[in-house]
Image (cartoon, rainbow, N blue to C red; front, side, top):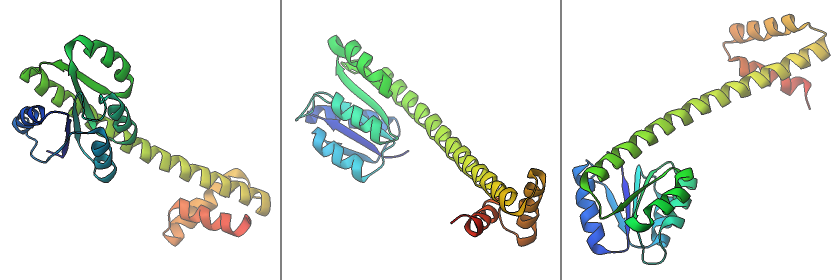
Length: 189
């Protein structure tokens, strides 16, 4: 399993949660007791999971959870007192932060870790798919711009411009994107 950042204001919390994380299969655990130290950690390293045991030494911890959710792809679990857990959960659910009430139930903790990990995996898959689609859209835009240049400057029809780009790509063993970029560099300045 991947790396875990464990932020807890108490040493007892670090010890207990480290044991629970090890049982869940995590061995690379970075411990910190303040929000500032935790922020520095996520700026330097990518973590699969971030567990925040509130309160931290310099803040409550929900501020750090929001920062982590906005700036990383980590799964995030925040642990707080049961009397405020519902309110905190309402505020953090839109950021994808899982809130667990204290005292920590081992079964609920393990289920939450599995759920957050599965959600993170799904999110990373969607990000990869999104990146591929964005790349494809960029290629289509470039090819369409190149077709427009061929239509404007060489008086090709749209099917002729399309066929020209396809044939150039096959003949020169280049991608359609590379052919389009060559055409654009010739006619657009």
